[in-house]
Length: 362
Image (cartoon, rainbow, N blue to C red; front, top):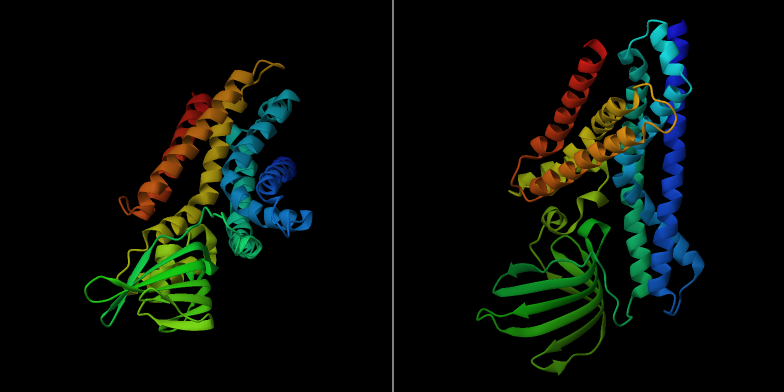
C-alpha cells in the first residue's frame, strides 16, 4: 500500500510539472507567433487582432508537438531535482526503495504524455494547421507580394497530347486544394499555347476544378470565367504524397494514406517516417526521462547541481538533433522509416539504463 501511495505521489508530481511546463511554453510560443504574424500583416487591409490571434492559436499546436520531447525532459529533471532537494529521494532510498521503483512513475507519466501527444495533440494540430492556412490564405488572397512558406513544388501531368505544368502559392487541404494557381499547357512540341491563372484549384475525380479563372491563349486575353476544368490523370494519393506535409495528416489517417500510396507504386517515405516517428514518440519521452535521471538523482546541495542539470539538457538536445537529422534521411528515402524512428530511441534507452545500472548497482 505504501509503495502504491508513493508511486501515485511521484506520478502526480511529474504530470503536474509537465502540464505547467506545457502550458507555459504554449503561451510563450503563441505570444511569439502572434507578434511575428502581426508585424508582417498589421498594415494590410482586413487585419484585426482577432484574426491574428486565431491564426496563431491554430498554428501553435503543431509547433508544440515538436517541443514535447523538451517538455518531457525538463519536467523529469525538475521533478527529480525537487524531490532530491527536499530529501524525499534520500528518504525513499533509506526505506529500501530502489531507483528503478521511484523512476517507474516518471516513466509511466512520460509514456502517458507521449500517448496524449500522439492520440490527441497530433490530430488536433493537423486539423488546426490546415484551418490556419486556409484563414491566412483568405486574408492574403489577391494581395501583391504575399508569400507563403508552404508554396507548392511544380507538378507536371500529361493528358493525351497535352502536358500541363501546375504551380501554386499555397497548398491547402493536405494537397487537394491549391491557392493562387498557375497552369501552363504545352503542345506536343513543348511550346506553351495557353496559360491559366486561378484563385483556387480543387482536385476532383479526373479533373482540376478552377475558380476565378483568367486565361491567355496564343497571346490573347480570354474572357474571365468563374469556373473552368482541366483534365487530369493525377490521383489524389499521388498529389498528397507530393504536396502534403506529413505533419498536416492526423496519425490515425497515416496508415491508410501509406497503403493507398504504395498501391500506386509510390514510396510514401515521408508519410511512413512520420508514422513511425509518432509511434516511437512515447518511448522517446521515456528515454528522455532516463537521460534526466542520469543527471538529477545524485544528492546535491542547493546550487551544486547546475552543471549536471545542464549536461542532462544538452544530452536530451543532442538526442533530439540526432532524431531530426535521421528523420530527414528517412523523408528522402535514404534510410528505412522504421530504422529512422526507432534506432535513436533504442540507443538512448540503452544508454540511460546502462548508466543507471552502473550508478545504482555498482
